[in-house]
Image (cartoon, rainbow, N blue to C red; front, side):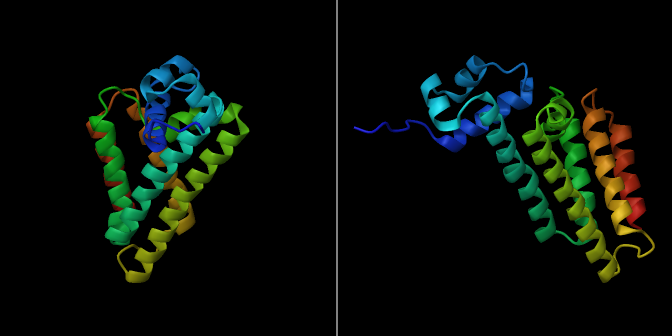
Length: 193
C-alpha cells in the first residue's frame, strides 16, 4: 500500500513560513518546524526536502500569496495613484499592528540570508524587481490618465519608492513610530502630485 500524506501540504507550508518568519532561518530548528507544522520528520523530508529546500518553498509561498497577490489586488481595484499609496498604507498599517516586531518576511530574508545563499538572493531580487515594476507601471498609467504628474521620472521614482518601502520595513522592526511611518506615506503622496 503506497504511503499517503495525512496533512494538507499548503497548510503545513504556511506554518513553516510562520516559524521562519518569527525566528529567522538560522534560529529555526527542525524540531521547531515539526512542532509547528504538525508533521513528522519523515513527512517533512519526503514532502519538502531539507531545511533549506523548505525555506525556499516557504519564501516562494510568501512571495506568491502575500506580495504578488497584494500587488495584483491593488492594481485591479485601485486607480494608479491610489494603488501606490495603498501599498504604502498597507505597509504602514502592518508595521503599526506588528507588536512582535517580526517585520516583513521578504525584507528580513534579504538582510539575513540573501547575502549567503545564491538561490535566496535570486528569489529576493526578483521579488524586489516585481515591486519596482509595479511602481513603474502605476506611475506610467497615472501619468497617462493625468492623475500623476508627468514631471516625475517613473523609473527614478519607482526606485526611490522601493527604497522607501524597504526602509520603512527595516526601521519598523525597531518599534513602529507612527509619526515617522505616516510621514513616509505623506512624502509618497506628495511626490505623486
